[in-house]
Length: 457
Ligand SMILES: Cc1cc2nc3c(=O)[nH]c(=O)nc-3n(C[C@H](O)[C@H](O)[C@H](O)COP(=O)(O)OP(=O)(O)OC[C@H]3O[C@@H](n4cnc5c(N)ncnc54)[C@H](O)[C@@H]3O)c2cc1C
Image 1 (cartoon, rainbow, N blue to C red):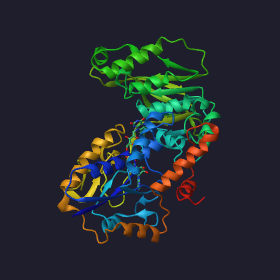
Image 2 (cartoon, rainbow, N blue to C red):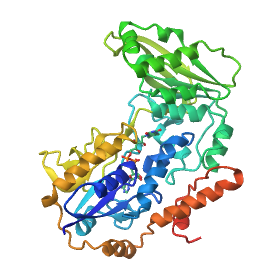
Image 3 (cartoon, rainbow, N blue to C red):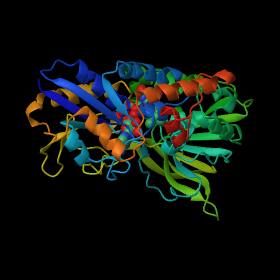
Image 4 (tube, protein in one colour):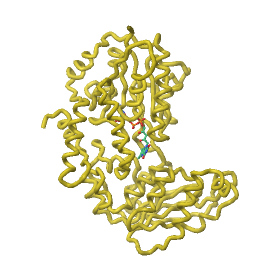
């Protein structure tokens, strides 16, 4: 029987779902799948993006682990796909050992926000901050939390995560899996005011109601809203009446407007109709304020500038304006959208739109960095269907045996981790949390992750 040796690069939800769906799919050939990730632990942004105080979503890791625990997918962590064979695998390596590859490498970097001053000291990308508080091994252990007033630019869920983590008292994050250095850093933060800015009005936000509501439940944090933002025009009124999600968001915001404020030690301000125009800096080049232009509704659901400029003094600023994918050596890349160009997951050459045989994409690197974990499932289905139908067009590898890839990694001295390694790390993190009554304490250091996973200590 024909056998598909498939490499999947990226062990986030998209990669794991793709493997699972292919194994369960109706097909006329055998399948053997190797899943690679440059991190020593799997699960991608579920481990390193989803906020630590969202245990229900973090719990998706259990479902993903169940898939891996079935034992029919091999996983190799601490293996990077790139140009340098010393770090992992190249496209030529994959062609030598597999019939096809799915790239499920997601998006980890911040999209740009081109306004003057954005590169000033004290101006950060939300993705970097998220990586810090979620204990990503490739980010510095220290984060400068020295500002009393902070701006967060963006009106999506990542902006809410960042604003919430900044405004929340560190002790209220302690029951979560936050690493020790993150707790210490947040505990010492002098923050009193977090300002969230969105270009549009309250009925045009990209927040989801559950995540928004959570802000209002923070202990000792007042929600501050401006009356001028709630003078809805006809379009906004129609949105509230006609869209259940917006109706709930509006209800949450209106309930905060009625609250007594003034007693809390911290405040979370939501500024709508505020288009950032400049990060103002002081004489030493540090962030000192955010300058924004007041906008107003254009009557069709958009906004236009009013020309009125305002400033809010802040000493730090986070842009949460979206994520952006990174190019992979030898693989086509769409620089404008930060994705691998593809037709329903079949990678295409951007110059002539012709299929690049044997190469597929799924998840955020296929579709762009929008959508929830669940969306990566339907994504994977579409990609997998094409792999099955492309049977005659796969690569013909010289050395497809399962042993050959292990030999290759070992010959390069790559200290790869496996599923057994994840079990070891998982048990270790849970044991670290136990004496403190916490579910787990994450190991942050990459070497330590690898050593624990390889049962070397
Ligand atoms: C801050 C934040 C919070 C979020 N919160 C939620 C939430 O609460 N609920 C929800 O449903 N969704 C949430 N999401 C969205 C969710 O994380 C994504 O939908 C999902 O993770 C995308 O899956 P993916 O597998 O495509 O990418 P990823 O999860 O990013 O996985 C990609 C994997 O590829 C690996 N990789 C990348 N490059 C290479 C390489 N060169 N070699 C080897 N491996 C590589 C990475 O290490 C990573 O493990 C959140 C996203 C962010 C950014």
